Image 1: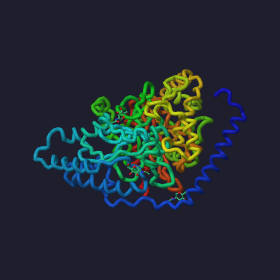
Image 2: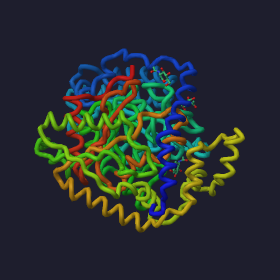
Image 3: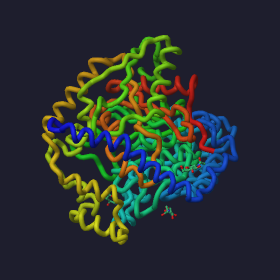
Length: 527
Ligand SMILES: *[C@@H]1O[C@H](CO)[C@@H](O)[C@H](O)[C@H]1NC(C)=O
Ligand SMILES: *[C@@H]1O[C@H](CO)[C@@H](O)[C@H](O)[C@H]1NC(C)=O
Ligand SMILES: CC(=O)N[C@H]1CO[C@H](CO)[C@@H](O)[C@@H]1O
């Protein structure tokens, strides 16, 4: 970006300080007029508010049957679905049958070893899953109309792990078109709405998951994240999301599948309402590989012995919105809490290379090539390349019935050559190294979440199109990141912070999330 001149910078400042607030205000006026119903109904059962690991124990100790739990969650899903539209396909009858089978097993005088607490830690506990992750026989379209009838031919590895652990799937949930946008809306299953305010987005691409978990339609679920797709919806819906270290939890199988460097960026991981559930979910999703990390998780981490750092913003990166006051306050609150509660200093770090985050991310997404037509191909499920200009015209004329505007825009922009991709990949390596030299194997980095709270529907394309990079840059580095909630702003919308550590130190970020939940703030119900 060496050639940017003063006029261009001035123009960008104008956009950030004047144009974006005006657009946001117009959306506000529009949505104020719409008569959205009141927020979600309250939970009728305490079971819906019981953390997953406790629910598993209650079922195992005969305090409640799996069938009862599954039925309570199904009732809740039916209650919220008309309001938030998070479910793509349900499997309620099968889930109840599976629960009855599990209750039978638990009533045996000797429970087979396969179902011991060690081998089946989630026995009888329901969950939900992002639709793009394969569940045999379930919808498998990622919001593409041409894949509407597709059914997944087999279970993804993580889904197999959940099954082995005894968990029961109730439904699969909505995504953005081809999982490449931050609003979960498409022409197959419509738009998912934010439980805190239905006029707001849920984020993407695991938006249905973030929404169903926060709305108490699920206690936990599985998402995937190549540019914030777990953490962004977790932020907008006020819950916890963990993007694991690169190449740790299996990404097989989902659509789209990451190719080449993309697979290093993609992370499949848990979204849950209680930080105290992150560890168990992480363990189950990881499967047999957990043995290698077990020591980390079982030995208690002494947070006081860790070093803490924070990054305030992306160093004047001109492509993104600066963190809003709300989001800055959330980060400051987290910093102050760590300093006062743990008695340690949290040091600010400033690294100039953050200015090129977006170029780093897109160079890696393009596997180091200058341009790509991969997305245009994905939009037709590999049959031919979509003509994005034609699709744009169809949208303008109001004839569009297949592709969302963000998907069309992405198909247009991917044709423009990326500026010196090899240079930006090298820069990314250097920046990763600079961060690793600071956080080493005993550091935690606090990082801003999305720069604003959940935008209104259809607004983000105008005001926040590249802001996902606050998340995406961590996919470039492959670091483990936990998104944690940090209370609500004055309009009742969730705030949050990202917690980052070095490769394979997922237990640090999970531990800090647990500490925040126990001592400061956790999920706050949207009702
Ligand atoms: C939701 O947002 C709209 C538009 O900003 C606002 O008028 C309305 O009061 C909000 N609803 C709730 C329940 O906060
Ligand atoms: C589901 O999608 C995958 C590609 O992600 C494809 O290979 C498979 O054939 C699809 N299943 C069906 C039944 O269409
Ligand atoms: C608005 C919309 O299209 N909602 C659909 C979401 O998906 C469910 C399940 O497939 C449908 O029942 C809804 O009509």
